[in-house]
Image 1 (cartoon, rainbow, N blue to C red):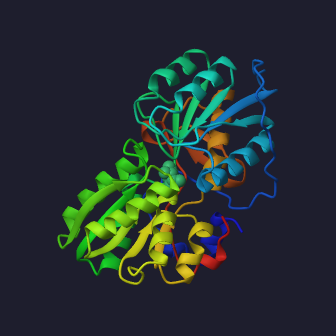
Image 2: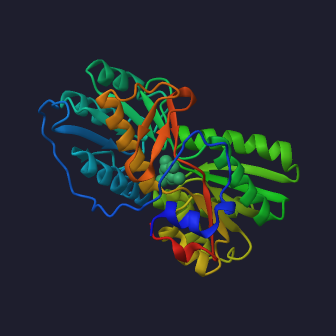
Image 3: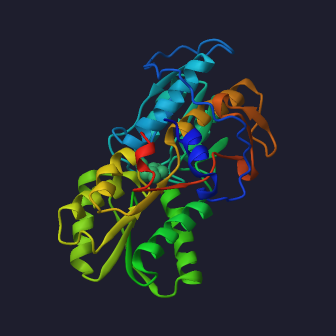
Length: 351
Ligand code: RAM
């Protein structure tokens, strides 16, 4: 079942309305299978013909990016584009540079990038662009250099949902901690800054005691959770705005004495989090549909490569089953709104 359709059917009112600058006009789920299109070839792309896009997530083996890649590949199949998925095993700050350089040498038409670092990648991104490659970030931006950013939801909207859940689950008072991804992650850092602002402005009785980093590695996130519990015996909530971190934190707490006392919330996938909602470790968490994010990214990249859009504010393009989208300020396209998952609705989602 697709998120877009289900969310609309379930409860449109439950969605956080954030002043979207997109206009999805259709929510018909795609039945196109996600093909395996790995191709390490180095021939130049022919306009309108054998276009090649490189998909470069923060790291491989992360279920979130496996799902976004599925969407990106489904869109590529619809558009007749060949894709190659590449990326580092670990989400380190500059680990993506070599993949950008290789894609540039291969003269791919576009790179779809979730940036591990806001600035460390810009030299290689600029070299790619100089060689004629369009660079579209998704999920985590490199604002200083990319052609276009496909944003899953506004940073303000994500921070608001995260703080809302932390406040609900702590009784709006007491100690909370954040378990993030890497210390350089553009997306998590933007959300955390806005969370701090929101906490100070509207939740004076909540104390954020620490921001810990699990580096989007399962074991490190698990160990950091244990350390947080030892350091802060009065901790009430761990907010993990990363799918890897939230799942690892929930796994730790599900078999510890903290279960039922320390709540885990943040951003997770329903499939990763289902058992922890069912066993009472997790009350509520949020996300968007990563598959739609990947799908939209490929359509946007294709529109850029075709010259249908330049990435300027107001540019419009068709994104297959998702309908028409409009480029907003700062060369950004917004997918939609974050969505909260809990025991009442998680059974309706499968990603
Ligand atoms: C992890 C990554 C990704 C983030 C999600 C919520 O998979 O850090 O960048 O958007 O979590």
